[in-house]
Image (cartoon, rainbow, N blue to C red):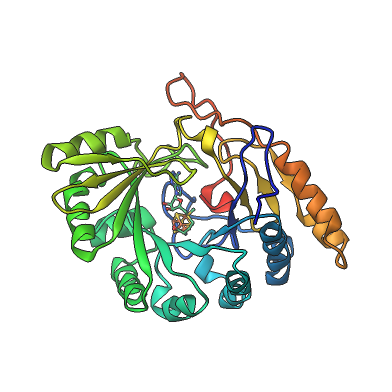
Length: 335
Ligand code: SAM
Ligand code: SF4
């Protein structure tokens, strides 16, 4: 299908990330405060509304849908939504249906996710140490997540591990995590921590550890080859020649990926964020709810929103204050 969503900088928007809930069974220190107040239910898009919205985007040329949250697998009846989306895989309009999860519910859902057409998933995991895992997630249990990953792989899902790079927290596990992923044949991506929410005021775990430093450390033990392929997002990849594994680095704080940005983000309340680092958003819930019988006003609103996609974001750690800091939590925009 020809992409129909072209932004003012000639970028085709083919990738939609959708947060299906703001709730989560963990309270990761860099993502949420311990006593989060969640949205009232009526604010959330229903599964039917999510279906209408995502289907409208697919109709406009979106080929990749990533379901996230909050924790997507704690949303009631979420499998119904995955199964509904799989119809777009069957028509060929959608090339990939995937999700980002903390892994806690995978043991229950892995087989059904595979049946709905999901083939690859991202699991967020920052440490292999039980006590540290409990500290960084506050409510999480490492064993449950590891069992979830096992179940996912047994179901045929390819797993990529995403770890947030936290100075003084998982620095010492760089080689353990790398070796574990190599052994289990899982790709690994390191994410630089972003200045979201109330990061910095809490627990002192959310310390910035630049991924350039991770690359340097890896190069001391492995032969590191840069890979050319990009995904239109903020990730760069290398191959560790000795193990053959792929390691990714996500540097959301640099501008070096904005020119190839192919994505927008939809929150669980129907706000469309055109850029992760900007506050600008468009409300798609209003046209959706005001016109239950027709998608024309919704499609018009989507086009108008894409027309406002900014060239790049404003994060910048190098300035005195956290310029470009956005106040919303990752669980709201879905990361
Ligand atoms: N609950 C799911 C999970 O944890 O994978 C999906 C939602 S979570 C918000 C998506 C990703 O955002 C996770 O990989 C998480 O580690 C990452 N994340 C959350 N807060 C972050 C922050 N302040 N900086 C960088 N990454 C963050
Ligand atoms: Fe939940 Fe994911 Fe945020 Fe952790 S990062 S609190 S698992 S939404």
